[in-house]
Length: 153
Image 1 (cartoon, rainbow, N blue to C red):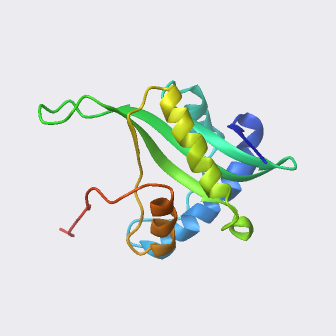
Image 2 (image 1 turned 45 degrees about the horizontal axis):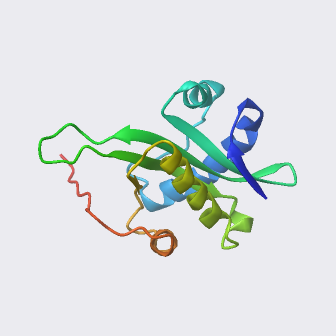
């Protein structure tokens, strides 16, 4: 298995993986998520951006997982340290290959990518119902720092 930065040739495989990822989002929070079609324009925006990439795990010529990362500056607020964060927007491993270490290798590749780009730390979000995902991230060194709460209007 190799991990590399995605390109236009990977779009069809990435679309399938995003569909799997959206299955989880719809299952965990149907009040906020629906299945959407990520078209070529969506991926072009990422490929052309200077602050984000998609890292893919490839095995035998097939994309089996991905991580969409962004390099962001912390908000310019007087009480926040001026730090740079690598934000993990999305991560998915094809369902039949989960729990085989592929996600862990993607996380390590993201951390290395962040270090190369000068990031100070890595951040992501997990649905509270996704206990399996939370265990995965904790095993990778993540810990809860804040909770997001909301109410309907």
